Image (tube, rainbow over all chains, first blue to last red):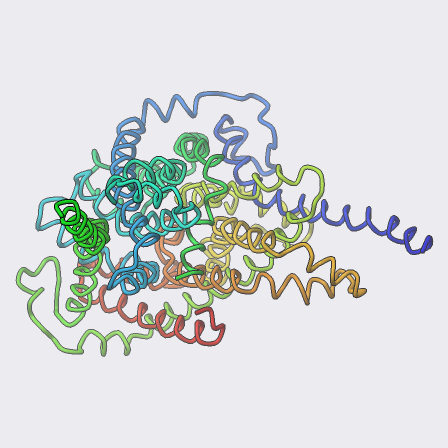
Length: 284
Length: 303
């Protein structure tokens, strides 16, 4: 007994150390590129185009940021991105909340088909939908408009938000809505007055999630927003890259700036990240 | 009497409400999804049977039967692109899976500071794919890249490689970027799966004298199997359809050495304005994914 305990005590720190060792290697792999992005954005060119990488800038400078704000279209692209992301978020969260509620609380004919269809959309390549959508939007004069891009972003934001909200409503108890119904409240009243307020954190998470998805999106944006003044940030930075080859300082400053909003949301979203995506799939 | 009538009426109203309400709630989603996904879906399939070209008005209604499919199936580049897509998917998923599994197991240990590690490991998830592509382009740089520096300093390589311009390396380099960007999602999922395994199963295994490795094989693996299979399926589908990183960094080049089905379809449509062939590539790739998913689901019995 005593001897086995001794072995345990000797073994445990070794395993712990091994775990830390693994964690540190993995952390370096995931963190270093982000560190490099931030560090490079504060470097003068003389510390970027060198054979031996400069880990910590010796002469940190804000020049790259000045460059981004004066010589690129960052501000306009930022507002284009904000408008599109907010539009996608509003529509996605609203539609997602009601559909998610219906999927979670009602049984109705066609429910299974509807759920399967939502899952099936995950499988369709973006390009597959993009080609016909582009032609349709073009014939409606919706290319190079915020609304046009918002509509295309809904193709992925809707299924995501519906699944997320269904999962969230599933996790809420039905008792309160039922007692409201017994007390003579109408079903619509029960939904609006009881269920929606309870679901507020879920709606917020879903909204942020839609925002992040729309903010990051490139394929639809680069196609629908072809004219220069309509570009969103991802399209803008890719275009900037193609004319400012090897101006790594400003490019990384641009990239750092466009990453900030999603970084801010990240803390809140973390715990919801997987819930909406897998909960639905497992039960579906 | 009157009271009973009111009661009957209100219960009838309630029944109607119950029948109609769900449809009322999902109607905005249905309308939007029909317009934005179902009609385009049919339209893409229709287009693949036409000669649709953006520069030839009227060509979108000229049907050519199976011509596009026959042309594509006789096109050696197309097979190369399919092979690229399969290699990209398998290579990046295998590495992702190894890293994610090890990371999730380590993050599931109750040790000090584990939450800090958790947050850091998840960060790439919020880096936009465009940003990820540009950051890694700098890391892969053939003159001043950190990766080349590390490889030569450690003696793993004797000369600086042009990772994104070398046809032999480009696909694998791009796959590494995908691993970096998309593994965090896998890690969170696996971690959720690990945390859902009841502690008493481990206790019972310990009482039975099972060592760490045996507990992993007999408790952990079966415990995370369902979520692992679902995550893996989503990842396979998404990587098979991957577009952003490849299009931004190489545009499918050099030659077609890094073209994936999505970038290939996109190039047909928006570089050559040949929407018919673009749709054809997209339809073939979707059919392949469906077949793959069908067998995957049947083998793993997720549903």
